[in-house]
Length: 189
Image (cartoon, rainbow, N blue to C red; front, top):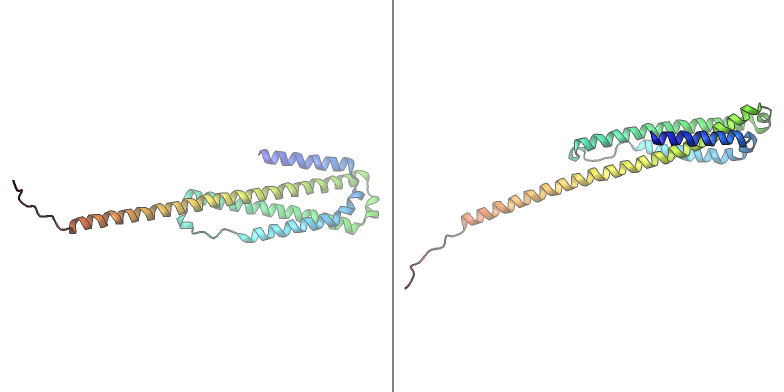
C-alpha cells in the first residue's frame, strides 16, 4: 500500500509539474528516444514473461514455501502484463503525436497541450517506477527460491547423514555379534 501511494504521488507530481512547466512542443525532441527506451523495456518484459515457472524438483520443496513461491511468480507475471500494457499505451500516444506532427499540435488548445505533456511525463515516471518494482520483485523471488532450494538440500543432506549413521550403527552391532567371544582361563595364585 505504501509503495502504491508513493508511486501515485511521484506520478502526479511529475505529471503536474510537466503540465505546468513543459509545453508539448518541447517534448517532441524526446519522442524518438522515449519510444526506443519503452520498446527496450517492453522487450525485456516479454523475455521475462516467456520464462514462466522455474524448473525445480517441486516434490522436494516444503509445500507452504512452494505455494508461496508459485503465488509470487503468478503475481509478478500480472505485474509484467500491466507494465507491458502501460508501455504499449505510451508508445501508441507517442506514435500518434509524431503522426499528428508538431505544427498541427501547436494549434491545439493550451490546456490540451499541457494535459498531454503531463500525461506523457507522468506515464514515463510510472513506467520507470513500475520497472524498478518488478525488478525488485523478481529479485525477491530469486531470494525465496534460494531459501527453498537450500532448505530442500539441507533436508536431503540430513536424511542422507541419518541413513549413513543408522547403517554404521547397524554394522557395528553386527560386528559385535559376530566377534569371537574371549575365553577365560583360571587365575594362577
